[in-house]
Length: 194
Image (cartoon, rainbow, N blue to C red; front, side, top):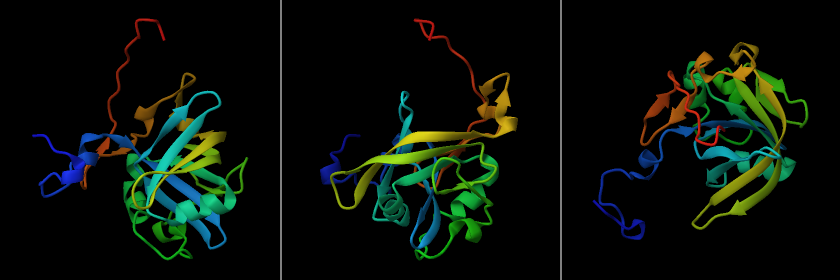
């Protein structure tokens, strides 16, 4: 099968996000004049090593985007399998004044380097200062870039000086209503030894 996105795919569901799988989920926490916000974004990833930078994309003018524009900071909380139900609760659309932390029963903690809440007990959290918001082609598509200014690592996720994802089983997004969980990892040495 081949299709041009501009012509449509003719399928009952769009295969685009099912093809880009698994996608890490950035559980983005923000603070704005309307209050605190927590929402999952599966268009999330690292963008650079030095200085460390991350990105997430918002499809639509959501509370997270508005809060980042106001405060110029955000936190990326890594989602573990054990938090899947709470994460799902925060994916709904709520009025700006609704605190998704409270709604989903997620314990909130304050970040250290920025004025922003974070998910207390998340396997890892990146505290970020927004560096740029890029308006992408289409209606309501935005790419938010940030420099990491602080990193939380949960103690039980550290093994012999390494952050071990098998200790918490990262949750990832697939297409449609599907998710994946990382339960097995393997190591490969690159030809250059890296």
